[in-house]
Amino acid sequence: MAKLFLNLRNVPGDEADEVRDLLRANAIDFYETQPSPWGISAGGLWIEDADQLARAKTLMADYQASRRDQARARQAADEREGRAETFMGQLQARPAYVIGVLAAMVAIIVLTLALPWLLL
Image (cartoon, rainbow, N blue to C red; front, side, top):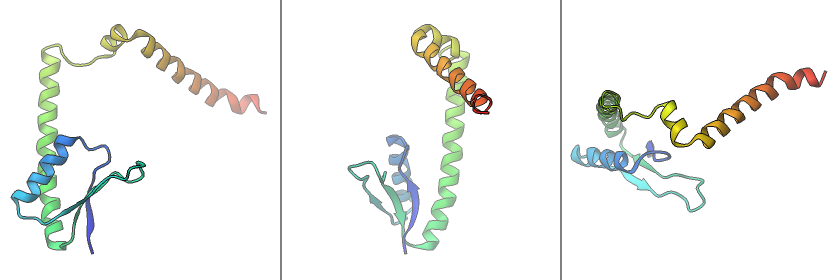
């Protein structure tokens, strides 16, 4: 029976392509289901053979560690060069949005803490 190897919900396209290439390069047989037109299912990569699934999980762990290290290096480089996204940068670029989000967060906190006392 096939096992779901990778749910494609919220997976960037480049990452999904790299995982497909990784499976093909290591001769791991898989098939892909497409997302549903209504957004109920996001699609996925499936592997039928249990031995291949174990090997694929090991390869995936190595791939994810490598991708994590690349993302951290990219983030560190952006921070060194002043291109990293910061709160103050967002506030300067989109002040109405940031203030609106902060106001909504404060309102939710106030309602959450005050509502039980108001209902007593």
